[in-house]
Length: 448
Image (cartoon, rainbow, N blue to C red; front, side, top):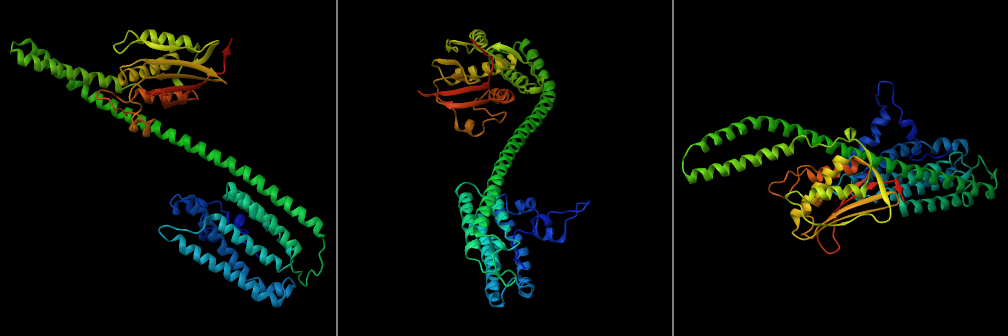
């Protein structure tokens, strides 16, 4: 009778009835999701905890093996102490692992050590009971799958090499039990076959694991983006309610100031009234800026535009604004780069970036357009102090500003527009100092 491996019961333990109630064994093991929560979102600790739980099931089965195995001729009675010693050693290792997992800073060696211990234990038990000709020798392929699933990089390659060495050991040095005194299949056939199958299982599982990891990362990114959208909607709703409630007393304040101004109360009072009126105007402007500026990708109207020509028109409009000044414009040379963009949101985002550059630096501002490999880059560069650390650390969050009268929505709207178009907004340092804000957006349509 063949030995049992720590991973033999994985499939059976995954079954649940129609009502969703877990079996008693699965409840004892815990699902991977539950173990992830108990592991404090520590990926390595979760893997070790899962392997430790599964190993107890295997140890229970292995302790029941010696008696029937001797009776059926799969294990010689003289080898029983060695068999039990391996199982007891595996149990001791599992107890040590559980003790280490309960420590504030658990150090259990990671999943590689645990998979190596399982593989060595399985190899030893198989060599006592027929080696590669034991009907349960294909359990090695489960180790190959688990290694590719739980390990990455050099650790995964190391386990693959161990699998090859294990296949050689159970083919060349195994003890043949009384139930099978001779090898029914030559080693020259069994060894290459097992190595090939183990490597194929390892490679296919690794490929699937990498695909699942990429999908998980994508889902996490989408979740983070949805969280930002939800926070923006909540902030927008709060700002809308706040502005609605504040509009009435603000209008009343302006009316009262008008009434006071019509009275001849002296120059000192008139100066105070002017200051109060300016403050009320600033509040009104901030309220208008905070409301109604959310970017909804579903409502953007896309048009095919010449990117350099659009930037040139934006600069012409911006030059007449209060912050407008001469700009070193460098359009894309040699081609007409026609991109599908929402002109109005893109224009507003570019105007905001130009305003930021003008407020950050009294020196020259540069606007450059460049396209290649289906991607266009529009960058605004100033010669100021560069991006503040708080902006870099919280980039992509709304209402983040370092300006006294800013709303913190200009950079956020530009970032949201770039993401909605399948691109990115980059915050970089200029080669000669200053800050660079660069759109990189897909632009596959390029005409000579």
